[in-house]
Image (tube, rainbow, N blue to C red; front, side, top):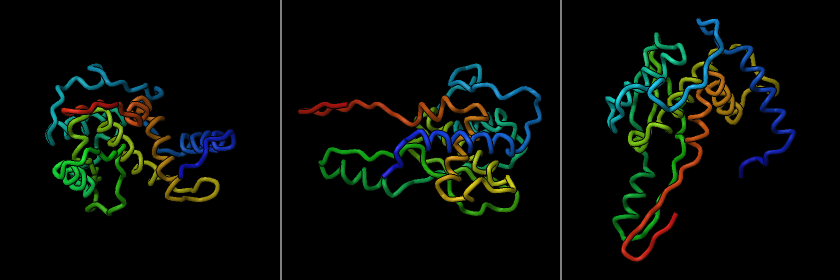
Length: 193
C-alpha cells in the first residue's frame, strides 16, 4: 500500500529534491533547465509506433538532458503481463491490466553502455515513453552521486530520487501526464471509462 502523502512526507521529498539538485552531475549550460513540453518545439520529429521512432525520441531526450554523449541502447520489454492480458481477451473475459511508466532495470549493461528498457506498449504512446526514458536516464544520473541521502539508499528513495532528478531536468510535465491515463472502452453490450 502506498505511503500516505502527509506534510512530513512532502517535507522529506523536498529535502530529497534539494539534496539531488546540489549533487546531480553538473550541466554544461549555465541556464537552468527549461520545462520540456510535449510539443514540436521540443519534439519536432513525426512520431510513429515503432522502435526506430523510440530511438529518435531517446536521442532527443538525451540532448535535452545533456547526456547526448552516452552510448544508449533501447531494449523492448515484452512483459508477461501483456501475455496474460492477451489471454484474458482471447478467452472472452473483458479486462485490462495497467502498466504505468514501467520500471528501470538494475541489470548491468555492457561496458560504457546505458540500457533503456521500454515496455512494448509504450511504443504506441509518446508521453509515457518520454517519461520512462527521462526516468531511466535519471537513474543513471543518480547512480553517479557519490554520497548518500539522509537515511541512506533504499529501492524506494532511489526511484523517487530519479523522478526528482527527471523533474529537475525539465521532464515533470511528462511524468505527471504519464501518471494518469483516461481510457474509454466499448463492446457490443457494454461501455465504460
